[in-house]
Image (cartoon, rainbow, N blue to C red; front, side, top):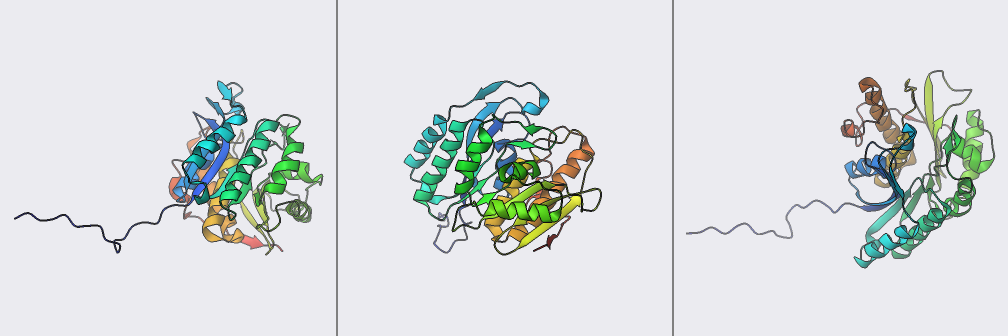
Length: 307
């Protein structure tokens, strides 16, 4: 007598399909910046991520030398054509963008966001306006800050500038918490109407903060929250931290629907990554070694309501 294999019935317990996201950023073969810093954390949070690369380099440019190439902006539209041909754009829940590289790339990213929203009006766009940093100044092409401000910011639902980029986008100096809140509110008013309109200000260092700390601030329509962690003595500062926190916050906000929870979870996970990076003494951030921290960080830094 032969026994039949059990059949898969409708009542069988199957996992839900993951949510899909499109991430348009740079790519490095060695190390973790751009998509190489954002894709894996989002995947560990349970998202299916469609990566579109604006450049492909051997390593990030912080080393001073690298190999590889910058892709033409038309490649983004071409890849979107191919994805759309699969009939899956209606299942895309959002777009994350980072380093763009050229003015044509800004327009191509905004075009991709428009196409995704046409297929799925509920899709949320998170823009990390990579333009510069304190100490380094503007490190992208001179025309990019103006183009990002004019084209990408008004299309965004979530924007994740660092302190230097917030000042550049708003023309407002940030020295105190009151300054940071005022500038973030000014930027929030320029985001896409009808969306959550979240501003995540990263790497906030202010004169009225406790010594030896670094903060991240989120400003929303429901309130504003500040999350503070110890400032680790990472010298030089590690590349890719902004890309990682943007991905972690975006993913956690999509999962929880709460800016407060997303801030606490994302900052706690990033601190764990950087703390391990510091202990191991590595030049590259340890997102693979610290991956268990992404979903439920062992050490949780609370988000404090400030408005």
